[in-house]
Image 1 (tube, rainbow, N blue to C red):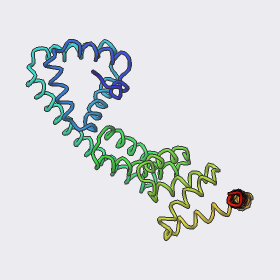
Image 2: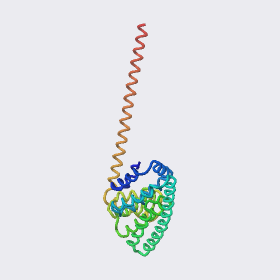
Image 3: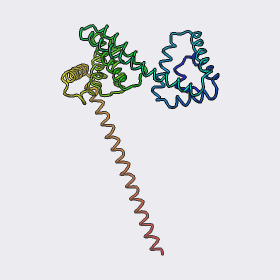
Image 4: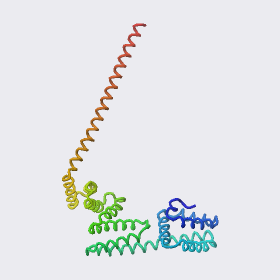
Amino acid sequence: KVSSSSAEMFNPEMFKLAQEQLSRMSPEQLAAMQRQMASMDPATLRAQMAQAQSMMAGMSPDQIRQQAEQAQEQIKNMSPDELASQARVAQERLGEQQRYMLSGANAMKDEGNKLHREGKYREAAEKYEAAKQNIAGNPSAEAKSLFNSCCLNLASCYLKTGQNERVVEEAGRVLEEEGSNLKALYRRGLAYVALGQLRRAEKDLATAAKVHGEDEMLTKALEDVREKLKARGEEAEEEEEEEDASKKVQDGLAALAAAIGKDGKKEEEEEKEEVVAGAGSERGA
């Protein structure tokens, strides 16, 4: 059985071929494959599938079918133990390849840094993008850290080249995992300023200032944004909204107090009626 999350990685033709190949495997071979997959780390399994998807992306359906048939022919004569052994070897090779690709990504990032220092921002961005592609699907902590670093550097490059939408995109990727990252908040805030989205800019810069209030450049950028908002009259509008919200709260509390007072008075009157009724019954008795 192919899981729904795995199936999403394949186009219809590839999914059909995978089903065909699985249907030709013996129960013992399927069981061995399932045991091997169950023992694998989910992130590693996803990385393997992503790599397979990447390898087949440039292949025609006929080429994919031919590759699948060749693999099936090899699998057909394997015992369950041999199949499990092959899977382990493939996993080890993937690990080696990922380490090799990670090393290459680090080298490309270093090249990008050199170009960035030289003011060659477009060329630097190409290096950072290539580094990101090199580690796509790599689940290791080192790869994730490198990926975020490349995103931050890309945001810096795109700020320099005026590609502000891409700054928002790259910084946003980092903020999905590190919500208080200073560089990501600062660079996205500056991009929002350039895009005229001052409210969003103020929010990012204010969030950064709560954690990194000692940063002078950040403080200056936040002050500038608030001055621009004030010049547009939006600060007063915000105060009015706060006053409206405060008034609603006060009105709500007053209504609640009135309701409680009314209920209390009603209960008091009911108690008096009960006392009078009780006294009357005693006199009657």
